[in-house]
Length: 207
Image 1 (cartoon, rainbow, N blue to C red):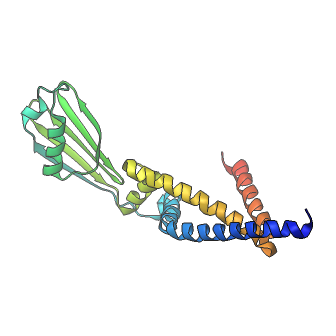
Image 2: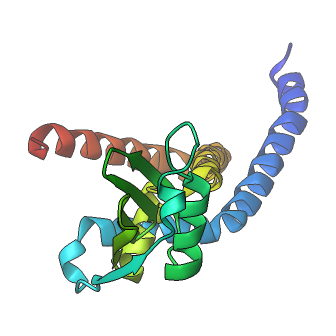
Image 3: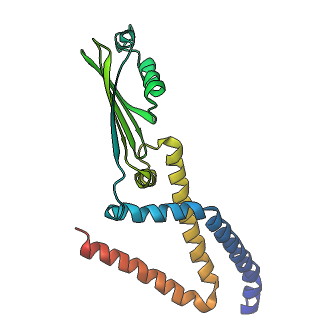
């Protein structure tokens, strides 16, 4: 195949690839813009917690539960659903139940959500309980969302989708620079140098 024929053969393929890469890069970037901004900003707040004043508030409350729920005929000896729903309705706790324990004298329940914890300890003989609720503030909520801590399965999928989108944005950017002939060499060299610098910083300064 002559050089001219090769150019004619590869020309349409190159153009289609460049157009597809540009289209994907633009729309993936815009579609993931909010996610990229969120994870970039919270990466900064996670790395510098001292920049943000602590907004933690702790509230301790007391109450009395129905003793029948604490000594039910369930397999565990306590009405788990009834106790949880009672605390949600009466004390307005929220979050997922992360722990529920029953022993001879006490029932303990823990609720968790981003930036929030609530722990209740209920006496099985008297029905009296102590509830400690901790709110860590808005920045703590964002930081926990960044880490996926106590955020549930759906948010875990959001993190996974965000990671895939960032990978695709990066790869389509590399494909695009390949077709920008005047900037291709310098762009690839800069990308390579940035990767080398990151590895060098890791090897030299990370304990």
